[in-house]
Image (tube, rainbow, N blue to C red; front, side):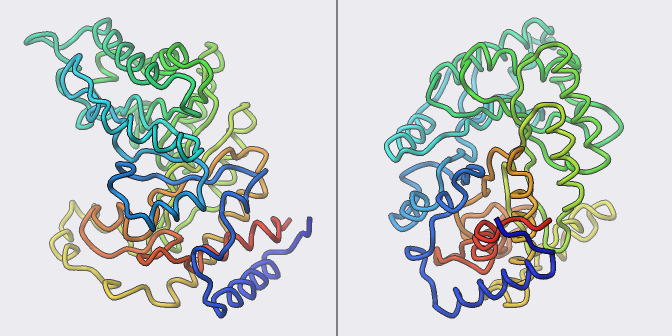
Length: 379
């Protein structure tokens, strides 16, 4: 494998990308992502209700480029079991059937989301009183057994617990889950998941866990799991990053630290938004009214922005290839720009955070990451 210094590597990526663009490459003629990265790590995509919510051209794009699929919402607790004991598996069953008929591996997402607003209220009640620890754990176990057990042996990996670590000074996110069960609530979910589907890879999934502020909590969670013999196989770094703000060093340091504990890493929800979201929460939200009108790229993304995005996608994949021994999967959160959650959250706008555009065509970022795979990681 050829090795490059950063400057030479980026220059070569851009020559490769320019040649591809000059040839007006179409989505059906460019190399398939899943094949480009074969032997390094899986390339996946998160999609909504399959297959009926997608055009034939979109389904063709999915089949060609991706080898593993994640349901965006259809397997989450508040979709599957809104009322106690009343399960609705219509959409998850359709998703699994489509994936299996197209030889796609499946990520189950997710069994337990540690946010009160993402959990039906009945989960935490016993009549008019708060539910006991025993009752909450009983309900958790029954839910995980029903969902993971239904697809036992058919799901490659489960995002067992989602966003359980606190953004503040606490270890775990303050929630009814934590207050009613205690600090072992995440561990219990993993034990129940392993019991329900012993062959599945079990993932802890969260945002900002690559940051120096939150990473120590992640490592504490992993060490506690290891010390108590609790099953965990993968850490999922969500990866909803913003243009010019990708924390490359923090990502690499987190992969290194997690790997030392014998756990793999996945980038589970990747996009690189081109419109900065941070101001939405700044100054107690006083900018939100004006931000609702902000839509700078409604008529298309400027070439310079696409170039910067491609450079940063390329550098990210360069980093991931460098540690391919520790990286299990990279999943894009959305099939193309028109299907991205960034268009609606936290305000409506036309964002351009993915590697295929709204016409399902590859963007400069696509060619940057495939060039990274061909050229190898610099050292």
